[in-house]
Length: 94
Image 1 (cartoon, helix red, strand yellow):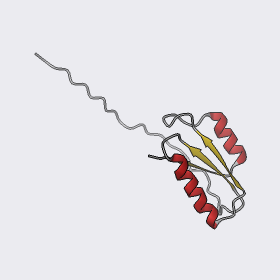
Image 2 (cartoon, helix red, strand yellow; image 1 turned 90 degrees about the vertical axis):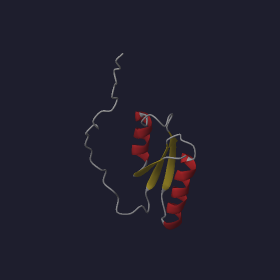
Image 3 (tube, helix red, strand yellow; image 1 turned 180 degrees about the vertical axis):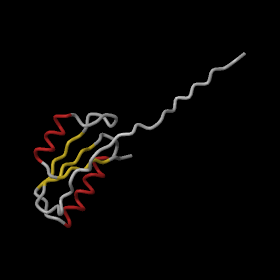
């Protein structure tokens, strides 16, 4: 009797990207929060935001929630954040 062994591994995909420019300071900016839908992601992001607000006078914040942790942010939500925010944070929970 013989067995066929399959190897499901593959080489990593090589992709490139350019980092977004970072503002020199956060004062007066609007911060976007992307809740990825995982448990406690919202608490994590709000905690980070609260820490920022304690040290910096922000113009405001915008919170959105992805429909699923396993998918990217929908284009309409990304466009909304891009139009309303100068800085965006995405977080995980668990």
